[in-house]
Amino acid sequence: MFSWVGSFVIEVKSKGGSKYFIYRRYSQFFTLHAKLEVNYGPETGTPPYICTLPTIPPKVFVGNKKEIAETRIPLLNAYMKVLLNSPVWLLLDEDLRIFFYQTKLDSERIPRALRRLRPQTRKIKRNSQHVSDVDKPRAEAMFDFKGTTAMELSFKSGDVIYLLSRVNRDWLEGTVGDRTGIFPHSFVRIIKDLPEEQYPVSLLRCYFHDDGMCQIREISIEEDVKRIPLYNELLDLIRNQFPGVDVVLNMQDAEGELIRLLDDSDMPLLAKQDKRKSHANNFFPWELHVTRNGDLDVYSTGV
Image (cartoon, rainbow, N blue to C red; front, side):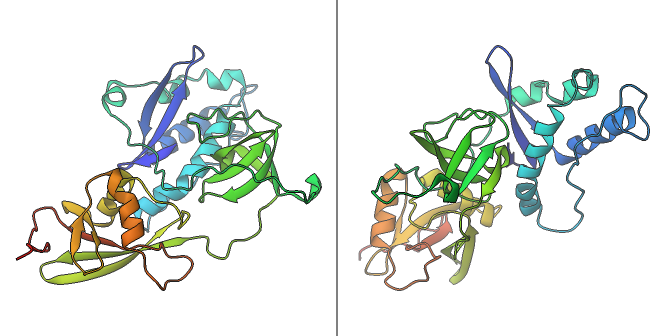
C-alpha cells in the first residue's frame, strides 16, 4: 500500500494470479470497520458469528494531511493483513468483498510508483570473522511476501530474515539464505533489532528562486544520503513541497550559474558538480535549485 492524491493505493491479487489496483480513502476503511463491528463485534454481533476485529488507526483531526496519510500506511497494512486472516464466514461479508472490488473509477486511474528514493540493495560482504546467528539482528516473517522487483526480497511466513539496514520507516533490507533485498517492515516480527542510527532522517537543502528572492528549505527524507535519486522521483518530491507551482529543477555550477536538469542522465552530474565541501553527515552532499518553468531570467545568456 502507498498513499496517492488523498487515497491509499492497494494492490489486490486474485487466486488466478492477476493483479489490480484499488484506491480507498481512510474514511472508507473507517466506514467498513464500523459496519463489521456492528455485525460481528463482541457487543453487537449475533452468535456464533462473533469475533474480535483488528484495531483500526484512529481518526486524526489536526495535522498535515500528507504526514498523517504516510503514518497510516503501515498501520492500515497491518490492519488489512489481520482482517484478511479472519474466519471464512467474515471474509464472505458483502461489505468486505465490495471493498476489495475494482470499480470503474479504480480501473481508469494509474497509480504513481512507490516513492523509491531509497538505497540500492547491496550484496552481502563475506568476511572471515564469525558472528553467531543468535547475535545477529534478525526478524521472523509473519506473512508471505512476494517481491515485485529485483530489489525486493521474497520470503515465506516463518522464515528468519537477517537484517542488514533500515531503508526508511516502512522498509528494511535483509537476507534469507543467499538472497538479499528489501521488504516491508509490517510483514515481520523483530527478534533482535538493528542498532540505533545516529541520523535516521536525511536532509536535502533546496533553494527556490522566485521574484528576485530565494527561499531556503531543508526537506526531511528517510533515505540514504549516498543515494542518487531518479529525476522523476526528485521532481515529484519538489512538486509536493511547492504545490500549485510549475517548478523545474536546476543545479549550480562552479561559477554559480544555474543549469536546468532534464532527465536521469543529469542526476550523476548533479551529485558530482554540486557537491559541498562541508556539510553535516545527515545532509545530502549536493544542493537543489528550484525555479518556475517559465522563468528564464535565472539563466545566464552568456553575453
